[in-house]
Length: 398
Image (cartoon, rainbow, N blue to C red):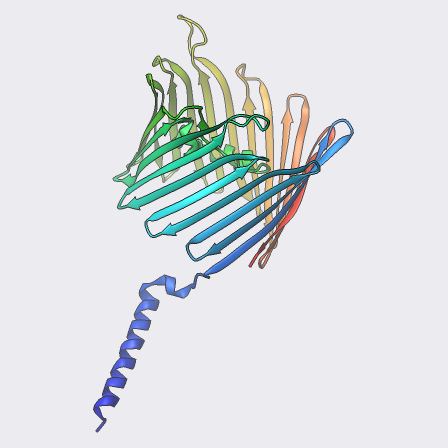
């Protein structure tokens, strides 16, 4: 007969095996171990011709370190004339609280933004404190600003956002600079073409000389049972200053969305209006944007047609073809964009060609080669006058 100690040992082993099996089944995260430390080192070199007979070479060295819940990043930029800019970014995640700070020198000190954000239940609240040089390099002028942010993630299809700026305006820069969120969502084809050969834009709030209340932004979004709506309202120290209203619908079968967006100025007059139609019937995506501009004079001036854009994307034989056609306010041809993108591992290739009414305008060609821990990339842009830019670089991840 087994001893009591043997029975205890067997019982412990059975429980350990059961807990292990339960963890493997119930918790998918046990299948993937997140490394405690990771780093990325990158170099980007850009050749820029300076007409008529000169050129400049800009190089950017970047470093990113991640240790557990702490992330640090540095980017240094040099040109032939010398040091251009330096940017440091740090973020620390403490459960529901995130602390971050980034400092920029361009080439002297220009920006320092500290942010503290906390998320509890469906509420996200935070504060951004900014010290900026709003003068020139020769005559620096320093000013402080603060932005209070309170948001509610979608609950029953409704989300809220409030931004309050002291000594700062253009507060939506903290949310990507998007003034009409639904219109931005359904114009994804236009955004894809705009960013195919361009770097992301570094959006910042605008800091003013004195630390007073300057701007309040209130936004409410509704996405419920196919009905879409949003309202973004701006206030300044004098009261109401502008508003953007969006109303539309979206269905999944068929994948169809229609949206109307109206912008009002401080006098509640229509400043701009646009209609967006987005249709996806695999493998084809189509987006149409019709824009109008508000009356430019006193009554009886009417809302005038401002332009029309069409975008079409289709994927065939492993290649993504994307086209954009723009017409001006007289509905005359203005611009045509043609983009091709494909991937033959480990190479990803993209090309963007622009035409105007006069013919060929410009083109860029981009390529990236991805290996384990190594990424090589290059980009060349040219027009009828020759090369406009040439970039190459690499990223090392370890």
